[in-house]
Length: 125
Image 1 (cartoon, rainbow, N blue to C red):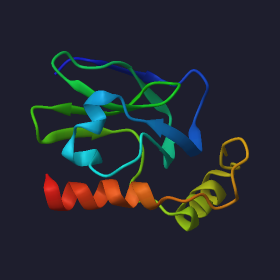
Image 2: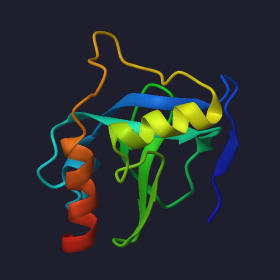
Image 3: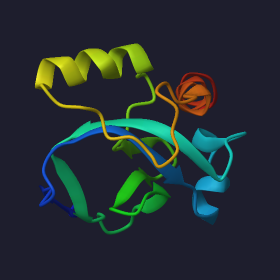
């Protein structure tokens, strides 16, 4: 499929991130009913440096693509729609890290829209 994934030069990302939807994401059934910007859990050491040729970027943040699609039914995500704040607390304890938070973020951010992404995947895709 091509593309390139590299180790994140900033190290492991563990915490919360604001995800943005470009026009292609707003039109995808995966993100149906999702606002243009939402909060998601992230836990990874790698980033997508180059998206594969022929893929469509559906979601992004300031660092790299967060969701891509091939055809209509093959998706790659670099956030965790299944994650809860409680699970993020457990992961941070396991890794001995404090989760990255967003400026002005409450201790437990609203992850409703991530659950909606998961719901969309199971029901519409």
